[in-house]
Amino acid sequence: MNEQIKQQIFDEIRAADRIVLTRHKRPDGDALGSTLGFAAVLRAAFPEKDVRVLNADASEELAFLGKDDEPLAEEDYAGALLLVLDTGSTDRISNPCYTKARKIIRIDHHIDDSPYGDLSW
Image (cartoon, rainbow, N blue to C red; front, side):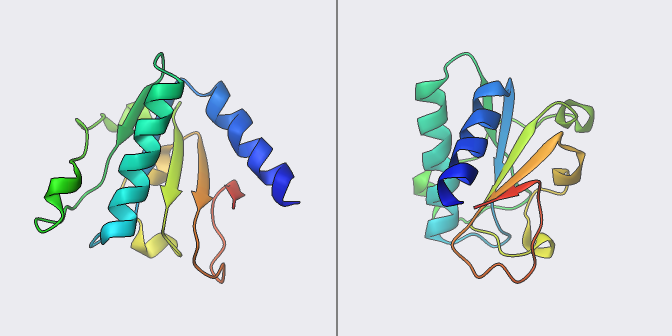
């Protein structure tokens, strides 16, 4: 099952032209590191894709790790694949436009007691 989910996630990433990464509100190091790091990997592997890290808040103390990208218009989410990292429930998602994405994939290490998204790993 685990390998199937990973393959499905990879297939969705490969098929997407635009990928938006988001994390939980009031970010800590693993939330920032996972989104910024994964975005860097995606940009290196798929330079033709529009990959953005977009959130509604930031951490001044952890600003040295990097910053979010230029925002998208709400209508530009319609065709996007949205990856939510390090976020256990939808009420903690930092990007208020997450529901406008074409598909939502959750990648998280928290206990899955509030399932959400089209795929979850």
